[in-house]
Image (spheres, rainbow, N blue to C red):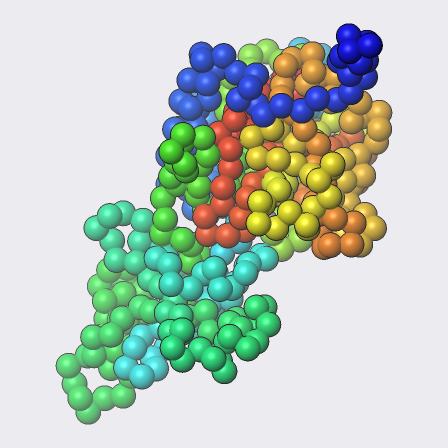
Length: 466
Ligand code: MN
Ligand code: MN
């Protein structure tokens, strides 16, 4: 009887094991090596613009050329410095469709307001407007760096990057001391305890040495900014300065099996898809890897997934296959194409297990997550991948020994969220969400598993090669 049970279990039941259980010593080593490079990337790249710069520099090293400068099988196309595409022309006719992996390189943060600098109680401060879904209390009392650009009165672009080098100063949002927080914070709902307008960064305290004047600290800071960057106060209006955690990525745990860092949603998918397209040679189908902006605020604007950037890339691929890209042809290619929407899911948090329904939730360290649908309130606002396509991806992963699991973004009535997949699917592209699960998503220090990182890379590689 025992034997029969064993056989039946083996034949019929789905068994989930941590990825580490599948690994040989060699695979473990490879995983750790892979994560070290990722850690470097994560510590150095903190905005979508920096991600684009990093991708361009590293893609060029791997033989991708700017699409404007050179014809050939491998090209990249930058969209307004905030989103980018890499492509390799495949062996099959373009009408057989394209393999696409799409992720986003923007991340939740605090943007400086157009008029950020002000003085109050002899302190200089910077006003912010948060970008994407944040829990405001997580952004107080941590070191903050400023990354971005300023366009001055002459139209010159000035880069700002301060707070991430050891010798740099940092900025911070001073929180209220617990001794005095009874009425201001502790009796309020968590979401109301810190108001958006109170997310102001400390930026200076030395007064300008003319005590006849008002706002002397602000004036002194403007003098420093003018010397350092050559800017005037009005220049802030034409700037994009992002306040991000001045915290480098680190290994987590005695076993160093996990990795913590800012912006893993979704640069973990950006990095792994970049690595994947760089390892494949002469793919069967033409491959396209997209790194998009504005996902965290609804995939809007000229650089988000709702823009026509994807179509522009498809047209470029068609022309490199020697065809003229008519409307009909673009539609045909799109309808034949397949995509993995590379984005993160939520892993079961040991302290908050009840927000997820455990038989369908992802677990840290159990491999890349295949998410059929996201959305909220009854699948509202999601691409619901077809059973046929999920079946196809499942077979592909099993055949190539990709360690994978399924995930759902929370219990049915709990809340939810979305990804770019619904916008990609609208073109007629078969799309499913596929990426690792994180703990502490959208926090200044998100947690991933090194095994999941590696399995995500493997998943994108086999898909782009298929
Ligand atoms: Mn995301
Ligand atoms: Mn997100």
